[in-house]
Length: 406
Image (cartoon, rainbow, N blue to C red; front, side, top):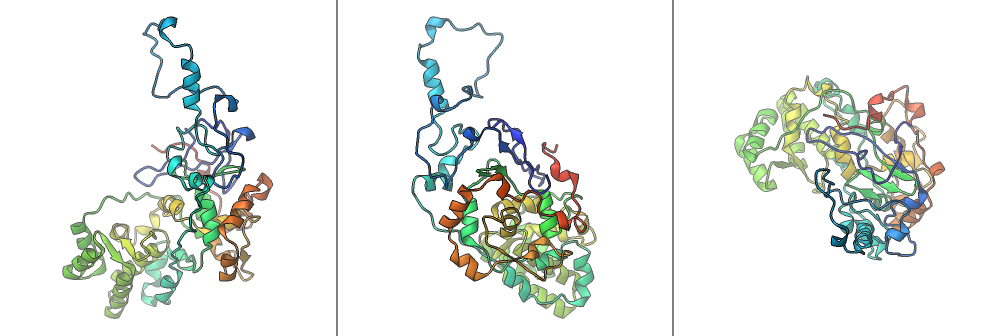
């Protein structure tokens, strides 16, 4: 299936889980449980709270993975093993969480997950969303002198992909089903995740190309990078990093630098500043809502090389934490009440298709979305949402890859 991959697999096998390597390499996989009775229940499943023991699990007890049988070692004498040792081990192995996973070896952080808190009746406030759409639009139309430079990087599609209004209730409900250990949503229909095909269709970014490995950046190196690429003075760059307390700069500061470079006719520096601002407002936005990391400027050092990078790979990992509403709109039409733009042009990124109005996002709160997700069935999910978009963005077989990249 395109968009969201589905596998039928045993819930105890963790070799199919998505992993992100240091270089930004990642593999995409999602799975659906074969046995409905073994689903891992999460936040919004309001069922009777029962402590899970070996008696409640219809599969064999899984031995401790840290204890391996040594074929060279003689078996212990029967009288050395307490009679109830097996029962105690089984009880400890399958204690798990009420309403959550019975085997905690996979979801190791479940005790601190919002799903556990909600299950125990500890409601949490909705997420606080920061949208940078207006900041991108505040730069105005591209100066004609840098239009070619920006288009040549393959990142110009992001200009139209900035969202002004986000649905806090919708995102808050989906976060309750998201688990970092597997990089997937543990939903009633199975485990689903965002794929490279979603990124390609929604944002029109390359998912095939060279990979850029960003290295840790010292503040002194950040200052020098700002001097070289944005043509600012060492004093100005140093003062900015001091104010941001690290190798970061403010979006407003980059905005001002862009305007100054345009006025001075330093077009390459202006293009770098524009792209750094654009990336900070879209792909690499963070929780500060004001600061951006300087390290991403390194990929803009040679703008003629930028188009070769598979920008859709590393941002996919970042978007797991900075979840975008539009992926939900595409795959879960029965859950959301989104509005499609009647004037949408299929040649544009699919993210431009959706309109989120303040009236809608304020009318529906997290509990309502939570109930809708509780009732979710396989037929309610749109597994192949980009059929009419294939003439614009073809499906790449790489989106099917389910192993570790080495």
